[in-house]
Length: 175
Image (cartoon, rainbow, N blue to C red; front, side, top):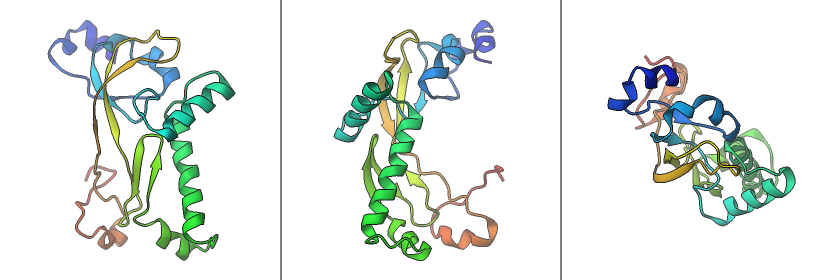
């Protein structure tokens, strides 16, 4: 799709309408769009904080490659589990965990993560980056242009939509 858009000159007048993703598949898909700006959930060189620095150091030491979005999301899940256990004093009953997690905020590889109480969505920063290259041996492909903190609509099923409170309500089906 991107190759065809480039060949047809579409990208000469329009920006990229997709987001970049993990280190390994970037080369296979995004070669035609070098120079474009888009969103990305995580890139190891985008965040400068102690948690991300630890993740980068340990992933490189253990696996010989920098982390990608799956590593960052896995680390977020692990931190969330530990913080939940601490908040409940180890009580893992469902109702106790739900109460502890709703509204929880913790530091992850990308910075602050907030668990939205209404629908349990993890609200976190997303990077806006320019794709500079796809041949850097350390996957330093991007220049950070900025960050954004998306607030997706509440996507609860119709029978629980009352939990959405004042949040805008959406649908995964787009309806």
